[in-house]
Length: 110
Image (cartoon, rainbow, N blue to C red; front, side, top):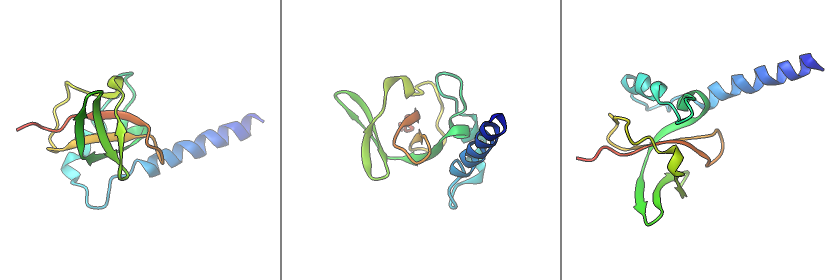
């Protein structure tokens, strides 16, 4: 039984890396920045999530990010307000194949 559980954990861990792969047209010079993002709990955002540039907006309740063509409310505890953002756009990191936001970086304001 232990070996089955171990194999399941190894399999899921290998999938996480596949889901977190950068987009084909991604700027390779930004890879270290994306890899350096950490969630408020210290977990690496891109190690467990799909991080990408996105559109965002401010509402009466806070921020929303466009995830797969749907506006999703960003939980306050997922906003990384002190993070420099070299992309010039908002960045959202979601759990693989979901709209659950793990990290959100504000767009660079000019």
